[in-house]
Picture 1: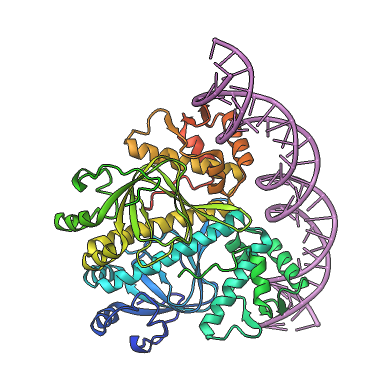
Picture 2: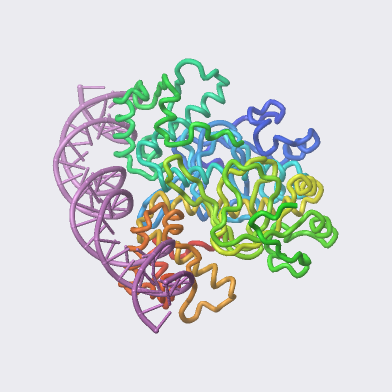
Length: 249
Length: 249
DNA sequence: CGCAGAATTGATACATCTCAAGCTGGGTGG
DNA sequence: CCACCCAGCTTGAGATGTATCAATTCTGCG
């Protein structure tokens, strides 16, 4: 059993799992969980590690348990576009596909709950709860991708930055279950270059626009990564979105 | 029974349906088809008509039978981004969602096979074949959306145009089951403005880049819409994609 | 301390947008 | 039958936003 560069996390019980109610297993009954438990194993990766390269054979699918990973596409000449940001409970891999379509990289230390692909596929056809949940999650991802297409195709650099900050702020708030009262405070999980790859910009433009938002009092920065948003509505104004948007799901 | 602006096409049998083997019903057995048949109805729309507005209540889901439709998002100030191109067999609507997230517009005359949403959802949980096929189609759409994100975020105007032409050419070839020998000939199903909305460009830039590709001998034009591609590899060179890309599915 | 990666800032180049003027082709009505 | 019209398209000239290239400046860490 070769332990390459990855660390192995302690296996723990699905019942205690932090993503139990949101991941692909969310709908499973106890007996279904037991079957999943038999084919699952945990894997840990260090920040910066690329877990999967586009074109690799994939013999597993997985859920992000903790940490953040990215999905990126790269062109021959090196231009890169991030096409997905994977947060805890998000699903990686495609049942029925043998080869990875994107690079998957850990931007923070990362723990994944992996399922061997073959048994997972068999389980999927026998337990509709898994397929149902996966469909729901895939539809959500498709909506997110389409919102991102609007951003990439039509928004200005400033709107792109504001949109990304708003998304991170909102997610962070929902994770902490914080009331939207008072200042929203969070850490950027991405470097400037990663933000650029996500937004279809250069890192210099990202840096300039963040500075501009800071000068205009929309955000405050403590260090490079720590962001304070005192007036969330003001930030939303900068995103270019409808004021009532984002409540469809 | 108010027949608004839409024409009603003659109802026909699923067995004769041109999209029978590719649509959401592709995996259904005869008995499942019978149930679907009971809740389906056809609807026709004229080119240019918007079938669904973002925010509308949706009481049905549907498959495109013939014709082409688009999914678009619009910002408050009128900036528009197309986020989907719906071809025969593609699925419209999201089970479990009450309200449309995008505008759906017919760019050609269009026939849709509609299912009342409630019964469709019930059928979905009782017949896994439908959910399975829908998952597969949604995953394909997600891949397409992600490829489009690369285009929107990182490709030049010329590469965007070449990519769109290549996609249309390829689809047309696969529809006609034509050998890739000789010239590929097709009609653009979109106006310059629609192409611009798809590509995140202005219509002027679309027009200029098409002219440039014509001057460079990559494509030939007969009229505004009819395109001849004598050397498909030369067109592919202009897309910026890997030469071996697009064979993952 | 000092190094290296990350980020900022500046000056300039350039791709695409914007605004504006004509062109084209097919349909319509006098 | 011709003149006109109009939507769709093309082309031009100039403006502008972002990329590119190039210095610095931070920041954390060995």
